[in-house]
Amino acid sequence: VGVAGFEPTTSSSRTKRATGLRHTPIGIFYSVVSTMVQHATVSMEQLNLPTYNYELRNKDGRIVILDPIRKRFVQLTPEEWVRQHFVQYMINHLGIPRGLIGIEVTIPIRDRHYRADIVAYSQQVAPLLLIECKRPSVKLNQEVFNQIGHYNLGFNVPYLVITNGMEHYCCMINHSDHSYQFLDKIPSYDSMISSTQNVK
Image 1 (spheres, helix red, strand yellow):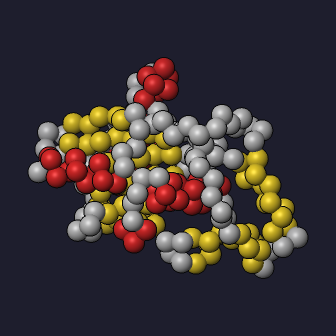
Image 2: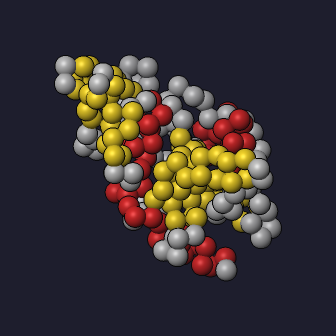
Image 3: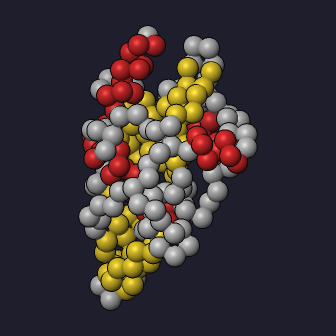
């Protein structure tokens, strides 16, 4: 069962329940990463995620970034900037094996197909974690929660995350009693695996 309508109800509650991924205080409107890429200047917002050594190229006037999961360069957009940083966070900080991460995974729901931004799998290749990425300027409101809840109809994962690179919310779902709980931090891969085994 997917979960929709699980946004924290007030702004104070929302701040309290935001997942703790704070590394450096960041001025959202002023902190910008500027890089020269083959005579083109690229400016992207510095995110509330660990930095990493990303690779950019200028391809026929389009700036592209290396996606290590799909093993190819993809167009750099604010949303892709968030997604690539979050993937690195998953690999380097949560301990999720690179080979068990999928990007833009097709989700069949009834007679339509959607695409999940990021999906992490267990060692048995069962969907474990579903992540929806938004550009930094997008507010993580009820619409975003509803979107990932709808996507989860096709996956039935126990963990959901939404992020815009600045704020991150993580929710653990108990499908047996249709309950959910917001977490203070995103669990490590081993912790997620362990919790799902305990539920069984």
